[in-house]
Length: 244
Image (cartoon, rainbow, N blue to C red; front, side):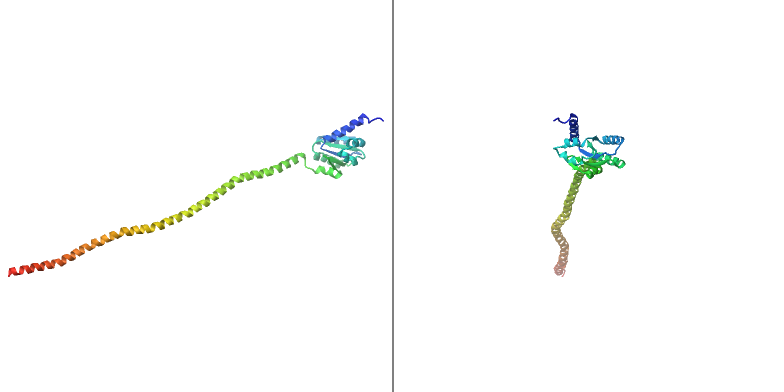
């Protein structure tokens, strides 16, 4: 029995290579589309980063046999063309959606995203995914947000530390200010008795001296006054007999 023809073997290998090198594969039915419409669709898909290939369903089954891609077999009925996605699956799905709105003959059957099998609704929902650039921007924003928060914490840390040190200094300064009057009061209280004692000690001799100085002339005067009449009387008594 003759083996498979080389042409068919080459087609099977081509299908396998495309599946292995693609991030996703979307199966479509193109029945009723004109050749010019198919050429336009191929061009738009190529611009979006995908290849649009038409294969016989039997050869595709041979390519996916004994692999996890065999789950595509239920979609292999009727005229089938496969979109092999190289880049942004969302952008490719949008091309299919927009083209299908103008050409309803184009029908998305299902697909394969990585190793995950998608039905018609799942494959069509890929058109709602953000573009590759938008996803990168969102990822960058998600990564940058914690970094910005961390940077803000680092910036706030010196300010908080400065506020804490300032508050601590104010607190310590307040203790010093409260202690100063107390120390002054203690010094005043301790000095007051000593100063009073010193004033008393210094005043006592002066007052005694002043009292002595004031009393001495008075006593001398009194002594003179008392002595004068006595001496006059004695002189008078002695002189009287001599005259007689």
